Amino acid sequence: MYALTVDRRGSREDPESLAMLEHRDRFRSSFPGAVLGWQISAGDELQALYDEPQCVLDVVLALADEQEWHVGLGIGHVDTPLPENVNEATGQAFVSAREAVTASKDTGYPAVRGSDWATHAEAVLSLACAVRERRTETAKQATVLAQQGFTQQRIAQELDIAQSSVSRRLSSALWSQEQAVHPTVLTFLELANEHPEAP
Image (tube, rainbow, N blue to C red):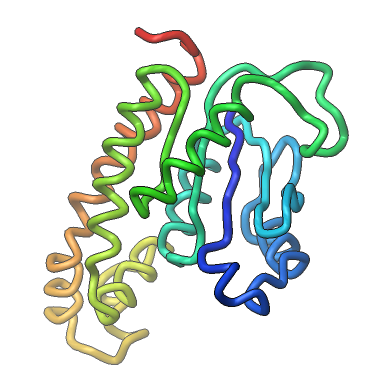
C-alpha cells in the first residue's frame, strides 16, 4: 500500500502558516480515494493511506506544485486489520514514508521509499517535478487547462490568446514529454507495491 507523510515547509519560521486543521480538511476534499483519510500526525505533518497508484501520483504532483510541503511516499506492507484512523496504522509502508519525508527535506522534491522499484519511481517522479517547477506562470496556466482535458482551441478562448500561443506555451512547458512519463511512474509504483522486496 501507499503511505503518504507530508511536512509543512518553513513551519518553524512562520508558525501562523500552519493552520493544520484547514489543510487537513482541504486535503480530504481535494485528494479523495484514501483508504484511511488525511489526519494530522504531528504539529506540522499530515498523513494518509492509499491503495491506488493513480490517486497517489495525483496527490504527489499537486503537492509538489504547491512547493509548500515536503512529501514522503512509503510503499510496502501495512498491518491488518486496518484501524479507523491512519495515525493508528502500522507497517513497513509507514516506516518507509517517514524515511521518505526526511529525504524530501534534503532534496526539495518528493521522495519515495520501499523496494528498488520505489527508487526507480522516485527517479522518474523527480524528473517530472523538476520539469513542472521550471514552468513560467503563463505556461502553467495552459498546462492546468490541458490537464483538465481542454483542447488548444478551448484553452485559447479561456486565456484570451491565439491558439498558436497556446501551442508555444505547452511546448515550452514540455507538456507532452512530462505527460508521457506518467505511465512509467505508475508502473514503478505498482511494481513497488506488488514486490516490496528488491527486484
